[in-house]
Amino acid sequence: MLQTLQSLIENAQMSYSEFRLIINTILLLLFVFILRVLSRRYILNSVTSQELRRKWIVQSRNGLILLFFLGILLIWGEELRTLALSVVAIAVALVIATKELILCVTGSILKSGASSFDIGDRIQVKEFRGDVIDQNLLATTILEVGPGKMTQQRTGRMTVIPNALFLSDPVINESFTHEYVLHVFTVPFKREENWKAAQEAIQKSADKYCAPYLEDARSIMEKLSDRRGLDVPSVDPRVRISVPAAGEVHLIVRVPAKTTERSFIEQAILSDVFENHDFTGNP
Image (cartoon, rainbow, N blue to C red; front, side):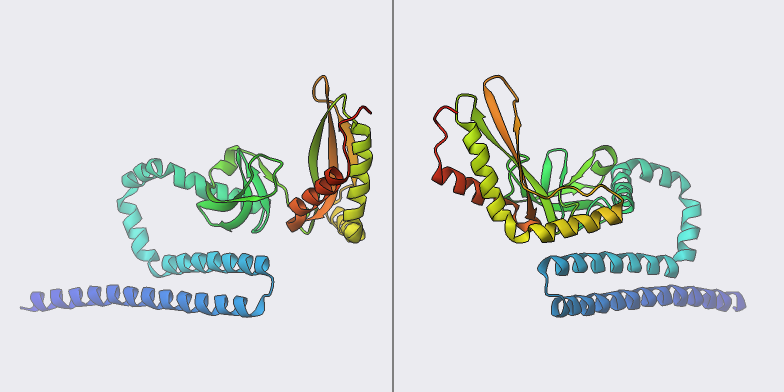
C-alpha cells in the first residue's frame, strides 16, 4: 500500500513538472507575440520611410524569433540534454538528412558576418538579380530586376534564394554606396555611324540631368571613402569609348544617380539624345 502511494506521488510530481514547463512555454509564446504586435505597431506609426520601415519590421521579427528559441532552450534545457544523450546515433543521421538546411544556416551566418547586403539593397547571385525585401536563417527573398544585368526595372516576379548559395558563389551588391550609386549603361553604334556626335550629345544630356544632385552625390562619396578608407571616386558624368568587336563602337556611360532613380536617369538621357539627334550619318 505504501509503495503504491509513493508511486502515485512520484507520478504526480513528474506530471506537475511537465505541466510547469508547458505553462512556461505558453507564457513565453504570449510574451513574444505581444512584443511582436507592439513593435510592429510602433514601427508603422513612428517610421515614415517605407524602405526603413520594412527593414525594421524584418529585423524585429527575426530578433523575436531568436528570443523565442533562446527561451525554449532555457525552459526545456534539462529535458533536451537528457534526450540528447539517448539519441546520439539519430543525431548523426539527422545531420546527414538536414545537410542543406545546415548549409543555409551557415550561409546566413556568413552573409551576416560579412555584412554583404541589407534590406533594400540590389544584389546579384549567379543569375538571380533583384532588390532584397526579406531575409531569414534559411533564405533571402528578392524582387527580380531584369531582364539582363543592365536593366533597372522590376519584372514583378519574386525569387527566394537559399542562403547556401552564399557559401559557394560571390554576391554583387549594386547598392554598396546606398543613397547614391554610379550607374553604368552601354549605347552601341556601328563604326560608320556618327558616334562622335552621339558621345558629345550624351555627355551634355548627362551633365544636364545629373547637375541637381551632383554635389550631394560627391559629398556622400567623400564620406563613404573616409569611412571605408578608399580613394574618392569621381562622380562627374563620363562617356567612354569601347571597341568590343570589329565594326562596333560602344559608348560606356557612367552617371551618378539616386538608388531609386537609376532607370529614370538612364531613360531620360537616352530619350533626350535620340529624340533630338540623328546619328545615322558618317562621323
